[in-house]
Image (tube, rainbow over the protein chains, first blue to last red):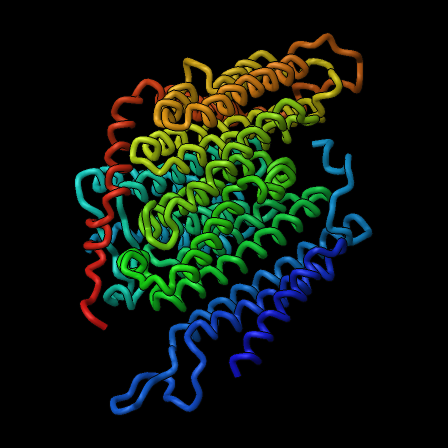
Length: 113
Length: 504
């Protein structure tokens, strides 16, 4: 279980980092999405991975799953979802204005301000 | 509980939402409501500053949940100072945006402005690490909207880079918070301060990772080298008034470093030791050097202003990295100064661009209308940013140099040579813009084609007037800042205010 979760976090993060280093907007956005999935799993695991315990403390139970990290993950999911939607819109705008989706700015471009 | 503490967050949130819902088509109404809301924010912040200087830190329990289980806002002298600075800067720059017509070039400018203020105020007030993350996102999402206000090819492309960079920063922040939580089991700042201090040695390595990750996140926000790459493109391509407001955005990073690394990981913490200062000081000095070289070599006026901003961040973080009460008090003084001076320079750059048509510093152009007045404003702002007398930049740098007597071999030469570079850079730029004999390249923009409002000049003048006031009243201001810095290095009242529930 631990190996599965930790290797999933590692794999998602590694793939995300590889993709955000690409030159075009589309893979960069995919990379950001993968990174946010990785971090969501990581936050989830920071409340300790336990199986078969009640979700919230009840008297007599041996332990309980940490509900706080679940709330944190929910918040993080909402925020990263909103941010991904936003960067897609901005990138789309930039693509329509320039006709290509390269993320870097060649020398000289944008220097006429 | 003092309910006014939440007002700086609630007020802009309500005003911004109402603006989007019912004032969509009415720019005049948006302007009136927006400016009066920001004016009210200045009044509230001033009253809160007075309250903070006479009281120990106060805590606002959201939903009346006791700390550390609920989220708290902690209001102390540092928070009060940042609130007043934010509100004042936002009001002046908003007047500029209204006078210059920038707010009419796209939609929802004033609503986004209010959300931006809300995010900034929330970040300064919160006493909870995860809530700090949330307010960072609030201020960032408003800043994304403001950054691409009025659109245009280069602005959108720079916007994509800015958003992508900050999304990576947010992910790092979440990794840091999760690591912090997995070790300590809490995210309340006061509770973290207590728990990190008594952490068993076996957990030191993990908490050190979390501390350095947090430092990286705040360095991205503060545009510290080598994480500064987003700043020149963003600031140079953002609308002038927005770039001026962004002068406070980098200070959010500085604020967070001061808060977290004096409260939770103060120098001498078992887990981190002097690690933070050892990382921060070289980075800050390199930032300062790169800013100064950038000012010297900038090809356009907007990039010159952006690199001047980087230079001032370098100076600020140098003072922070010393981690002594004296240096922190100097850092806070320089923070006030550099925010206002950088904002003034961006407004002046916008005034010039509006009239000259191009910000290129490589070619001389025909003289611009109102050249004398703008040249005088540019001269004053350049003096302020380069740190020459008589403006407050000089006092700020003097205080920092005085606090850095132990680092005479490293801090002094870098800071002094960087100041020289900046003076030369500003002098070259100023003479190209306002003095050089001009070839007839392009027609000068007719004075009649310009907006007639005097408001942009008044707004820029007020910013420079505040620099002068900061110089004249340096005594009382530094008294307040010295007390602020002293309270930062004695966190007991801050922790006590949280009334942490005993036992768990």
